[in-house]
Image (cartoon, rainbow, N blue to C red; front, side, top):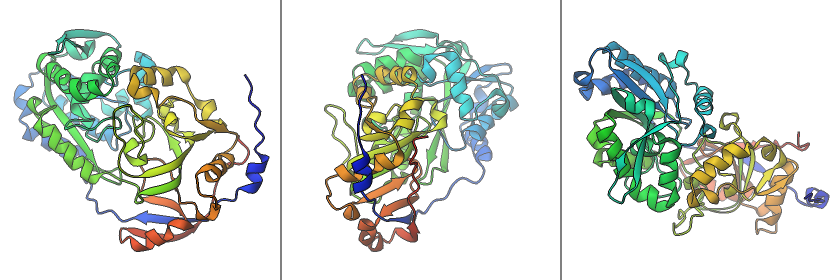
Length: 427
């Protein structure tokens, strides 16, 4: 099937509103030395008492773009070596990387995690061991190499999830149940949609902690600038427990957000798995189109345009279905196998995130269509924001219609006018 669309009239008839650069004023105190913090936290936990010479310790590495993940992981590996252990990395990312061992190793490399950078071997497999079942009869799986190790150190960032709200969301428990569960664990959690995410992750994680020789968790918190704000070592009993829940509360307090409650158009330069599990963070864009789950109260955005994929996402366009309009360049970069494996593994929670939006030849065409269809008949009155991605929100480009709110908000600083820079050739 071929669709022919004449958009010359749209190009000619739709001017774009003037842009202004705005900075959000955030008060942040990032960790100055992540290596020293990792070592002091592992010391504080008393983990050294559990390490015997020659112990093979599996250290988890996920698929998310986490600031300082390489030095944090390398510091943990170095600490384990200093205490006589023989650490190795296991990819703990469910079905990501195309659900292949080689794909998961490649994904780690794109994040900077290699044997050379962290100082230990990487052992990747998609084989799992069944550990047992939780109370509702759901089986629990664990990466075979991690299970066969003498102990496991779980490392992950704690943050709000993009598909559900609960006391435990994204973090150490999810890394156990879904990450170490590989494709089987991911499919099991997602097959019952939000129920699995809310009700099964914690008991599945607890079973892995108890039977999988998990020694500790190393939790990472990031501030609004995507900087490392805290690194906290948790004992096994706190993974999926009050300790992890308290860290989630802290994380939500530091989260970056758009400073406007209502927008006509949001232009997102890029999405990708290194930005968010859903390509762009649903908490930032205010869209959670999952049956039975209420969307975030703010912001309300009429039209979302996505212009490109990040190189680090390797064609995985999970989350593109959250947009209304995109570009032919983005569509040409999609690895449909990797995208559909990821989307379909997530079941009902993922289906809404994998569909291709209206696709137009160039970035200029896509933005013009958004302005034309956003419900505001006067293009110069359109409430529009342009962001690089949903992780980087300190500096925004905003339309003139938002300047009154900028001036009224003490947490916003107007930096000056900006130009539209958009591809007009589709190349």
